[in-house]
Image (cartoon, rainbow, N blue to C red; front, side, top):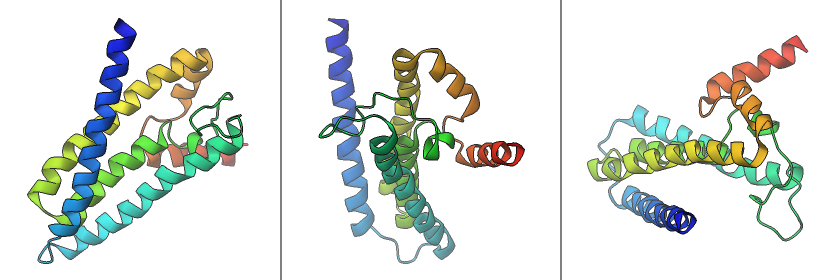
Length: 169
């Protein structure tokens, strides 16, 4: 019964998140504020580009290094992946989602897009927290050590740590 409730809650949160993201994207196009502050809008476009990197790169990383069976989803890993983008942050796709929500807020500069974007970012962050719990369940102590080495979402700290490890080695 508990698993069934958790699965229902998980599915419901995905549906809500999908509706919110699609709404935010559509509203960004229709409510684009031409009178908005240009530098903020440009920062939004840069963040949108970064969100695409964090969103798409993990798909290729996990397919290539995660021991995914042919024909299976990239999330069906059998091998723990802690290099590439996963050496920078633990959950790059969720971080990409947070950046997507933020980017659309900055690009549109509209209160309704902001109102929708804030829960989008919160739900993605909660996904990161849940992902850590799942990682511990699936990989145990290996994942706990990974959590100590790689930041949850702070990609700047993650880049600095990777550079420091590469310089030291």
